[in-house]
Image 1 (tube, rainbow, N blue to C red):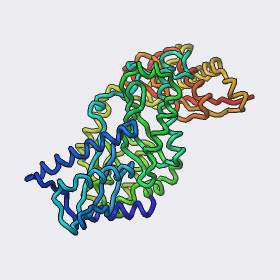
Image 2 (cartoon, helix red, strand yellow; image 1 turned 180 degrees about the vertical axis):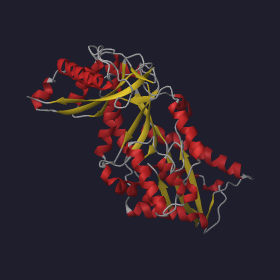
Image 3 (spheres, rainbow, N blue to C red; image 1 turned 120 degrees about the vertical axis):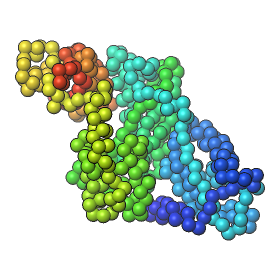
Length: 441
């Protein structure tokens, strides 16, 4: 985080002792003051959304002083878009005659921008939705076209964030209407780099270039989940999380820390009793937090869970119908065509892997443009084998180049239905990540 941004943020947080909230002349209650401010800022928020062409959530805060019949901005903070502060402050200045203000007093304002409530009912993109067809994937089957829509829906956001050097942790939902990304619901973003909104504007431009207008217009409302991790090396996890969370810990900003740990408030405390279900990034984060707890940097009273509560949470998670199992630990892996006579799970695993690689070798067609430009690399594709044996949820988890990524999607979409995995005597969903080595010879 830039020092200037940090100092302004901390200055604003310390203003509570010396400042007060604004009041309106025609109000006699706190509810009235809040309603008037909300009415004033809602119209400003709508104008901001119209200007940018999309809506986004944000946390806006600023403090001002009233002196010589004028409002002077003292400090300000915006989580995502600092430019928006100028709009809100200008509206407040224009309405200053309606306010009850005293000279020499510092007043503070808080405003949370929110997305359209109707979007709360949106579900994540799947085959049940009408979705836009990417020009590059017009000849693919339905599963392949869906995977392409998701691919460009995420890949271009990665590219846009990268173009503005946003490399830190970033988690969001992108809400679509008529195929276009018109809402950005961010749950984790860097505090130092304030280019998120500029990046999303660029993303819309790049994304739309992959689809024709008719295909976009015929699409339904849905959202895509996006998650970028700035943690590249787990050996450096502590340094990474210190950069992400150390600000909150050093300044005892416990509510902000909780939101940074778990933006959706599913489990708003640090689980120091049982983290067995956590993997990857989340596990590394909790290990870091537990270390800070042991060192006394965070108060123990705020970060523990009752063991019975944890047991109930774990039990409810195990009972989820949509739970996806791991290929490496499931009792019996899916049975690929040609492997039916095998009985041991390890033999079935080997047969599955051999046959899926044969499928890739037989179906993969090296793109002519990639050959011409000497493009090669390894693409990692994840997919789900459903309880009925169908292949769904195709997604590029690590790409090499769009030409190779798209061809890999097509190849996986052509996989035949297979016998599902079995766990405790019942068919279950399993996740499998397939590396495709697209190498020129």
